[in-house]
Length: 457
Image 1 (spheres, rainbow, N blue to C red):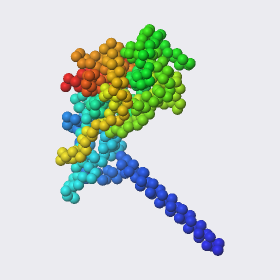
Image 2 (cartoon, rainbow, N blue to C red; image 1 turned 180 degrees about the horizontal axis):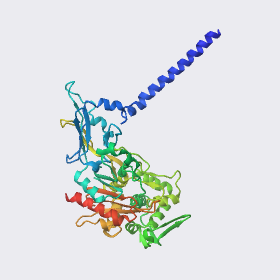
Image 3 (cartoon, rainbow, N blue to C red; image 1 turned 180 degrees about the vertical axis):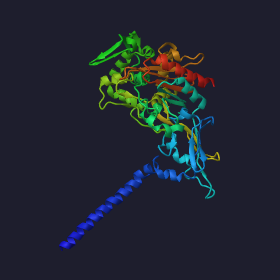
């Protein structure tokens, strides 16, 4: 009997171990197998690609941006535009894996599912056609003049990305040669600042606060601006400690009064400020062709004083340049924020379209009358407020400046705007990282020039 009990115990243990193994294999196949099989460091991927010519990538004007050269048994990935698209296309390396579009569209580029006509035929991958305008991309890159920061240009009515630049950058042709030095670089050249950089948006965020002002019936408020908002242990000065006296909300928006907008945020309170932020996608993630960082309010429990700081784009609020551009684009598009996209078409090597991106609404942020209300104030910013440097002769520009305080002591300079205001075709966001100047003086002219370049071509 004792022997039988021992045998039963052993059988039970073996059965439990077997069940654990089966459970793990089922879980792995259901939830983890795709992640492992598509991991850019998986050597089996490279083995399966030995008989594949990876597809090319083109701009909207069909300028070649990435291609594969076959040199004997080797497949050499080349990037003719070098640094210009490093944070959009990324790189494809057998040593260091794949990033950005090279990773996100790996299956399409290697032509998974494509059929070869013969066993000996080299399979050809599919080609990507981007929404990026190469000439505008190069212009924006040059206009950034080597400063750390980002420029995002987007078509408000569709969500198409027209240009997207992040600096500093890197040459994807030299990844394997320069890897160590780039990894050790304190300037973080691998960080795609346009999509993954998170910054306090400063006064550009007053666009969202203004939407709350409209939604909660606060548009008739008048302020005695003495240059300083002070409640509890929170003190916020206007830029350069200016005071504006008796002002209404339109004037407060045009001169970017921190006093007025901190007061408005405090009066709205934490719940309403957070709710308005979330209407514009803060604290939410969205699908994009390449990885993005989630804009967020970083308070576990936000107080009304925290809300005052968030309302001027400071405190615990951080946003990506892409999201700031999307926020202004929502105003330009009558309150509807379009889902942004980079890849317009996927085509076979025989030029057959097998994938086409269609514009779609991401968030219905505000009503059209609220959008008109904010747009009127944004036009005022450029015509007679802090954004005068964004003026373009013969074209009505709507915009908002921002100067965001940082722990480094050097402010980020911001501007976001679109044109023509009556029929928006392009929205541009610019951030200059730790620039130490105001958005109106340094970011404004860059955005203006990118807008003018696009509209004049």
